[in-house]
Length: 44
Image (cartoon, rainbow, N blue to C red; front, side, top):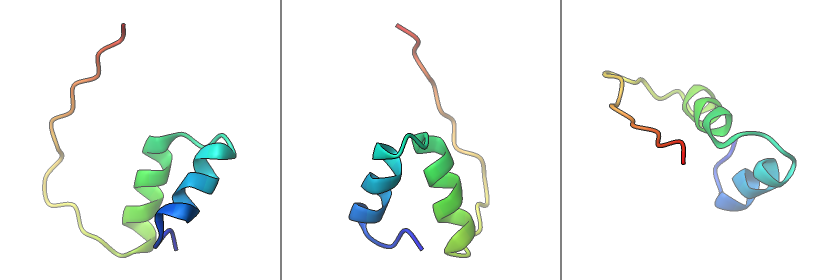
């Protein structure tokens, strides 16, 4: 699931947030996250 960028773009256009798509990508492709990345969001 979500193997191609076209599939992910369809989900974005359907209104699903990018972070949710990333989580789904990790879960459905059986990836293991070993550490949480340090992410900084700037609310401008």
